[in-house]
Length: 205
Length: 295
Image (cartoon, rainbow over all chains, first blue to last red):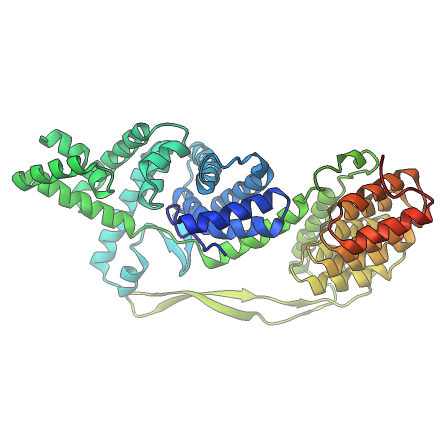
């Protein structure tokens, strides 16, 4: 059985052989095989949605749309790229659509559901918050506010490239491939994103 | 490397995206430049601050996503490739989604009414399911977020409008297969109606549990002659992954001999993955004085 990927990079050749068999079975209509493929990648797709969109419902939508599209279009997968690249291409397109819509709506809920319950992103990280140090909490809150503001200020593509590189651990070459552009274009996007962060957060760290 | 180019590759170095030569050149520059060393330390601190703000998907959300996707995939399951020739004979009615929507709307509407009215029922005390979140405050107090499950008991005749609509909703919306089957049973004891038949057809085609689908098929036996039910039975033959259900669908379909059925059975003799289903098709064809193969 292929193991669950915790990030887009969590992939081995041995798993690839078994994965190819699952893909072929799923292409023939084996729904169990498809669900095993889902289980291998769904956690990282959901994490991508949560981190990029910061909304439980948007992340839920991205998850459902990504895997339904994958299911409907699996017969078009020709093994000319890695399956996770193909799947992430669908997921990132969904995320980009949501990000662009969010820009229009201008909404960015501060409270995100996490394993530990609702977490206000303007607060510090949970363990620091629990210590109840008011001075530290204040600094964390301000830092959180700055991070939120700078993430909101990034273009959809900058934010996506940053997320895929920083949190998902994808190489820039893979990100370029995912976005249908080049490694150099992904590098430029990442550079712009990190420069904006440096300007916004530089005096805080 | 000068300061300008070093500033450009700060992040790329931290992400391990530089070539060996570029890395070496960057490190050589850093050793001799205090300003760039400070910038590099600041960049590391920014990376660390961002790391700490990564959001892990809640386990409950992942579980909900998986459950809902499984249900949607079950609904999406298309007839197997190569059998498209029989689609013309089969009607693919779009009753499922509107009927489901009506049931859900009814549930929400009734839910709203029950909040305000007793409907002759008994309201039970809230039950605490679990503590989700605790937050100590500087004052020494603590804030606790709990999840509550509130239960309401309603008693009434299955024919009462509210009870009836809730039972209909339960057949589609409940995640508990036993509850869906029981609701179907109770509804099936009511006089026949288009609404009941629609509910049974929906369960036959869309319920993820084969036991519930079988129960729906049994309840549809009296209507096995109607074109709507025969269309649903043919879809079961083509798309259901349970051979027991496919066999029973054959039994019901052959009660009415039709030319179009002969072609479908001949196709199944060639393609069905189950030995017994293929054998049952062969027998049905012989009973209909039809040839087993297609020429």
